[in-house]
Each structure stands twice: as structure tokens, then as C-alpha cells.
Length: 339
Ligand code: UDP
Ligand code: MG
Image (cartoon, rainbow, N blue to C red; front, side, top):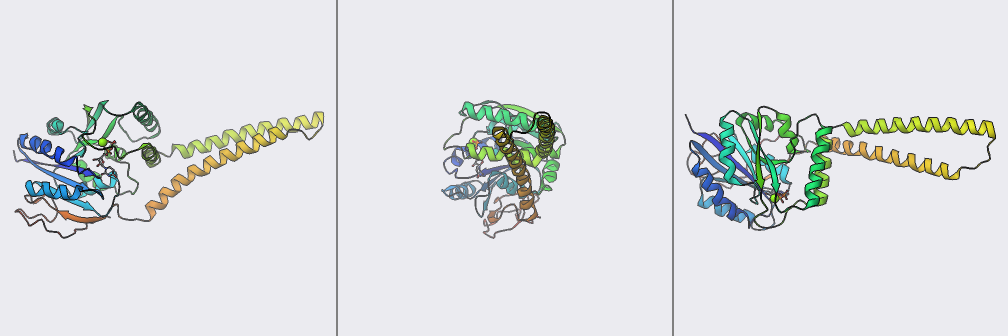
């Protein structure tokens, strides 16, 4: 059997402290895998600390390390997309830079890949170091999106996963600007398999996802993978209109029978306010979708590359512009065709 290729893609934003702790673990795991040509691709998502320098130091020590620097902070989803775009061949595995996704499990992912699965995703059994609030809102989110979306989005699943070469190629075709990766992985389909694991706390540093960011992330997920809220607005409108009609009949009948004594200021106010509220909610909803449509229509690239260093020793098929032999970590900024 010829050796299979596997690239670990790691997006990092201000993880200078975590990467030196993570890399030896990755190295040990890759060295322990038989018949695998392993590479590591670090993506610096516009860090403002020493992350890029740390990545360069790791690449200098370890010739299987490639580094990619984006022109600014584009967010984790775009950073992962960039990393995946720079892997031309073989399977990929996505991990967080903070060590929350234990690299020691990679052999299990690889074993499932060898059994023929295309999309092996880690499902969190326990989440250390995360608040009750975060866990319960996450659970609620997966329930809501599970109901609203027709694309299968497994619960308690992050980006920790292995994609087979064909799943990677398929994902590369999805170029939408609003990227809800969990949904995109599900959309691709193929043979999926969950791998339960214990999610540890961060090795160092703080989470970059605060409550507000997670809320926006949830909105992103729902609007990207479901139009049910738009339909719900229609039904809400219909229900309100029916109620208003019945109420109107009653008002007319009452006036006809008992005369109109121009009372009912409270009813009038509550009806006006209620209808105003319903209309604003529906407008806001439409706005959410319209705004996303607008973003998509601009057709901007998903990210811009500042610097790309292919691994010094890279299999020629795996990375763009990588010679078979050590190149001098050429500094040319290669803009991948991002259409
Ligand atoms: N990350 C990134 N760009 C960002 C924010 C985060 O590449 O704008 C990376 C971060 O470096 C880490 C991963 O995404 O490797 C997960 O981030 P974090 O640990 O902050 O999120 P959490 O694990 O709390 O969900
Ligand atoms: Mg984390």
C-alpha cells in the first residue's frame, strides 16, 4: 500500500503560547502513524501577538510544517477555509490550536477513514472548563438548528474532524461568504461517522468566542441553513391578521348593537403596539436574510493571503508551489484562486 497523505490544518488567532505546547503532541502522533505522510499546516488568522514568529520557528525545526498567514483576522471559519484550500491532495484533519481537541485521538480518526468513512467528526462527551450557561445554550442551539435545517448538523460537534480527499474536494466547491462550517460539512454528505471524545479545557489563554460572538454564530448557522424563520414570519402575520379580522368584526358588531361611545383607548393602543412589534420583527427577519444576500452578491474573496510557506519537505502533490525538495521557505505571497 502506498502511504496515505494526511495534513493537520490548524487555525490560530493569538495562540503564541499554545502552539509550542501543541506541536510536540502533533509531531509525536504523526510519527506514530504507519503508512502516513503527515504534514501540519498552521494558519495565522491575523494574530496580533507572536503567533506568526512562533509558527516560523516551528517550521524551521520541523520540515513538515507549512505556514499560511492571512492579511488580517478573518475569523475561524475563513481561516479554516484558507487552510483547506491550500491542501491539494490527501485527507485533512482540523484541530483547534488550544489543545481542546486532543491530537492523541488522530489515530482513531485515521482508522475510521481507512474503514471507508469520509467525514469522521468528534462529538463532545464532556466539556471541561466551560460554563453551565455555555453548555446549555449550545445544547439549545443544536436542538433548534436540528429542527429548522434539512441539512444534517450533528449535535455537540465542532470542527474537530477528518475529511477524506473526496470530502475535501467537495467542500472546496462551496464558496459562500457566510460560512457556517458545521453545516457545510453536513451538506457535503458522503459516509459520516461520529467519534465521541472528551473535550479538555484550553491549555493556555482565553476563549475567543464570547457570548455575543456565539449568538451571532448561532444566527449565522440558522440563516445559512434554514429559511424556516421567514416562513414563520408569514404564519405569524397570517395568525395576527385572522385575529385582527375577528376582533374587527366584534368591534363592528358591538358598535352596531350598542352604539359607539368612543371608548377603547387601551384596546386601540395595545393593538397598534402589538401590530407594530410584529411588523418590526418580520422586517428585521427579512433584513437578516437580505443582508446576507447582499454580502454574497459582492463576491468578495473569502480571505486574502499575506504569506504562504509550503512545508520544506512536502509531497509534491499535496501543496501548491511546493517543490519536492526543501525550498528556501520562499516568501512569495501566493494568492490561491478563490472563485
Ligand atoms: N480562532 C481563529 N480565528 C478567530 C478566533 C479563533 O482562527 O478569529 C481559532 C483559535 O485560535 C482556536 C480556535 O479557533 O484555535 C478555537 O477558538 P477558541 O478556543 O477561542 O474557541 P472555543 O474553543 O472557546 O470555542
Ligand atoms: Mg478553544
